[in-house]
Length: 236
Ligand code: VGL
Ligand code: ZN
Image (cartoon, rainbow, N blue to C red; front, side, top):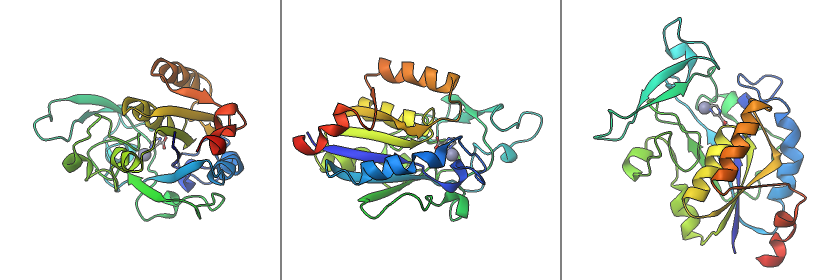
C-alpha cells in the first residue's frame, strides 16, 4: 500500500473570524492536519485551493433577485462539456468566496505546507461548480474540459505515483471533502475521510447525510488517532 493525504481547501474564506463562508471551528483542525502532514507514512501530500473567478456561477451576487440568496437559492447549471450542454444540475448559491488572487483564497498560515508535494487549484471555470478535487459537478474527467476548471489531473498524478490509499481532510466535510473522498473511491483508491480533521457547513444534518453517502460508497470514516493512521508508517 502507498498512501496520499489530501488537505482540502484550508483557506481564509472558509475560516472564522473573517471568512466570507466561514465554517464553525475550521481553524481548530489545523494542529490535527499538521500532525497528519508530518506523518512519514504518507508518500504524497496534496493541498487544494478553491480558486474562483469573480464571475463564478456559485456566487449569489452573480444572479438576479429574488432567487439569489446565499446558502438557500439554487440556479440551473449546464454541463460545460462539448455536446453535453443539455445536461443540467441544480447549483446551490454561496457568498462570494475564494476569488483567485485574493486574501480569502490563501491557505491559512496555521497549516504547515513545507512538505506539500502538489497544490491543486480548482473551481476556475466560471460556468461550473467543482467541489471534488478530482472532477467537476458533472463528473467530467475529460482533460480538455477539466483543464478549464482545475490546475492538475489528480487521478493521473496519484496513479503515476502508484498511490493505493487516499486520506481526505479539511473543509468542508459536507461539501468539498465529501466529494473528494467519494471520487477517490470511484476512481478505485481505498478512500478514507478523517472525521476529526474536518469541519462542516452544516455540522448536524449536513454531516449525518454525508456520513450515510460516504459509507454507502465504501469510504471509511476514521479518526486521526485510529489504527488506519497509526499503522501507516509501518506498512509503507
Ligand atoms: C466549498 C462551498 C463552496 C468547500 C467550496 O470547500 O467545501 N464549499 N465552495
Ligand atoms: Zn467554492
